Amino acid sequence: MKKKNIWEFFRRLRERDPEPQGELDYTNPYTLLVAVALSAQATDIGVNKATKALFKIVRTPQDMLDLGEERLKDHIKTIGLFNTKAKNIIKAAERLVAEFDGIVPENREDLETLAGVGRKTANVVLNIAFGHATIAVDTHLFRVGNRTKMAVGKTPLAVEKKLEKAIPAEFARHAHHWLILHGRYICKARRPSCPTCPVEDLCPYRDKTVLDPIQG
Image (cartoon, rainbow, N blue to C red; front, top):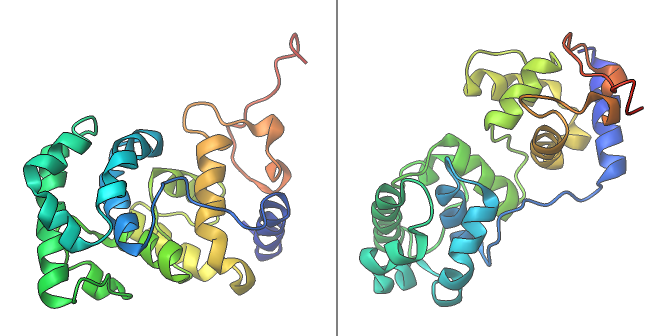
């Protein structure tokens, strides 16, 4: 995608949604970290249902340790891979209490030392909790980056690096949210909603969908 088209792409998304928000419920950086870790291979809706009661009693890493792994499992058992996620959340809480005074670190390197926290999770926390202009490449961003030719890559890291270079600075803070929401609700995997896409004319994707002539 041409540089001028990329600028217009984000201008239009900003015009439609000036202050995009993530769809995971949380109360502070720590509960956000937990929610994002739980969201791997799960829906935000499912995570929010599971954490509704959890986050009323857990607000800090020490709260999580006081709750314990078994009781944590009871809260998150509706989420895929809940056994592994519970173990990692407890291990991460132990490290946060022991080495970070119970405070979620504001840098990717330290975040990635926590159990169950990879680059994508770290980038989401840095973006939402701390306002960093990071790009967390999930399946939606990976798809949009490649389809639009804005950031063609075979791996999430390759797409992330290309997006960082391609996105104009004025849009960098919210680009992650605009792209994930665009991929989730418009540029969908099986059948993208090209006829209603606000940036369809800027996108070089070859297999665009069209309106059914009978339905109009």
